[in-house]
Structure formats: C-alpha cells, structure tokens
Length: 157
Image: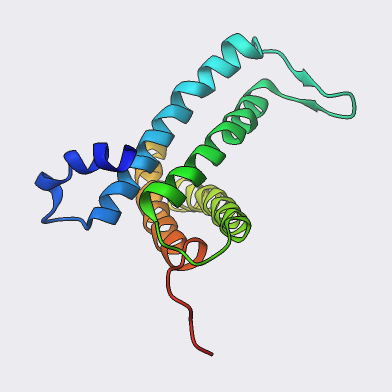
C-alpha cells in the first residue's frame, strides 16, 4: 500500500531515478522528516529540556532526545526498507536488521567525520557542509543497503 502510494508520484521522475531509488528517497526522506519533527517534541515536551536520569547515568536532554528519536525512527526505517524499497532479499530478517544497524552506525560516524573535516579542517560553512555530507551519506547508505543489508543475489565464492 505504501509502495503503491509512492509509485503514484514516480512517473515525472522516471527519467532520472529507478523506481527503487525513488522509493528509497521517499521512504528515507519521510523518515528523516519524521525524525526532525519528533526531536523537538521529545526535547521540549517529553524531556522538558531536563537531564534524563537513568540511575546509573545522566544524559543531557538534547542527546536523550536524539537517542529516543533514533529508537523510534530506526525500526520504521528498517521496515520501510525491507518491505517497500528492497523487496526480495534472501537474507533472514535478523541478518538484515543487524546489517541495517551497522550501516546506520557507519552513516552516523561518517556524518560526524565529514562535518569535522569540512567545517574544522577546510573552513567551510556548516550548512553547505551538512548538505554535501547528506548527499555523500545518502549515496553510501543506498548502495550499502542495496548490496549489503538487503542483498538479493548470492555471491559465488
């Protein structure tokens, strides 16, 4: 149902993207927008800008909001990728989820490293640096999810 809804908007973009790439952009973009909207709600209204005390550790509200938002959007992103974008993988769901998590952690690390490089080493402005970083990471993520997390063909060895 979600796939058919996304596919309705695909025809004008069919010259530029495959259907799978378009679905990836739509699902990833939608999940990102959801995360961006969820973050301030968690930070301002759920956590009320206060430190989250877990007994054994205290977490600043901006980091706690990020962690909670990730905990909500990660499974949504995985399910959208598994059932809407990359259908037909022979890998078990547990293997896909673990690989999806690994790619997500790599993307988080790359985001940090590229921003440090572009802003602190090259001296570029943060906003264009984030835009370039997002473009690089989106391409990396798509290729990693397609060929690693949700692979559809076995590799002969």
